[in-house]
Length: 349
Image 1 (tube, rainbow, N blue to C red):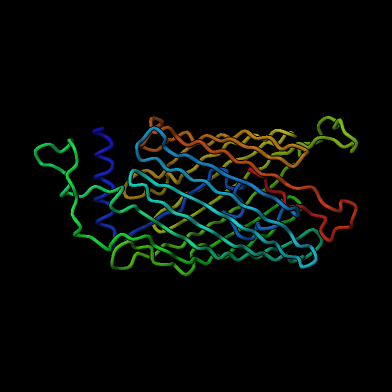
Image 2 (image 1 turned 90 degrees about the vertical axis):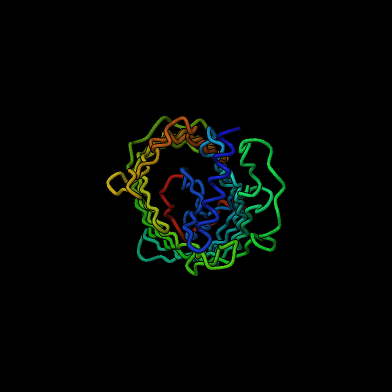
């Protein structure tokens, strides 16, 4: 109970003092390629098939101020128009104050063939964002704390702040680009280009732009055993080193690691942080992430990852658990000739 009060009072004070200038940060996924539309709008339709998926992340479950994020998405590719369409819905609940964010995004991408087996995809995203702090339901104010019994029952609050702290509605615009060949991909995106105002109180608190750059290279490891189906093909084996850099306001992070794919299993291990670039005099290191997943011939992909916290919070925070699931629907006309022979080589987790 003591720790709960401390966390809530801390969040209340923090919220009060940053109403004029705040540095809000978007949710993050460790399995960033399993949330492709969230990473970069250029990924819409990149799988060349109709696809649906869901992601769930719970961060720091050992603390009272944990973060929970859930999202669903669907996308498809319109070959006749070289266009990808996508829809994404995300709900995020942050910290002891239960800051809630609902995001609904419509996404469009276009595919350009630059040379043989070389493609470029620009993408655009328009999002509606609604944020709600539950100002009077979730926050505790000074006049509700009894000085003679600070950890006892709360006193009734007053309405001095009536009319403030109402939910905030915003429109956010984002862009991205993706270049890829048979084994290489390079991508970049900028979210919240228009920097909408996210302040719950009078004043201005702009949502900072989020910049992301991601890349990887697929290295073949030869063939595995022959599949026991009608295709008479061999199971795939490859190693994929990847990197993902993101920056939003004063916050920066770098994910460096690799995936090992031995069909149908995939394993991943990477490090997240920028230890050589401290933030507010603190070492900027976050977590070591381990992943295991399976990609079935039916088009079903399932992944689980765990973040082992290496920041000052320590593993007593509970780290972070993340689950991803996606389903690719079979082609309605598998025998038809395709305009694109090269498939995006990045992993699905």
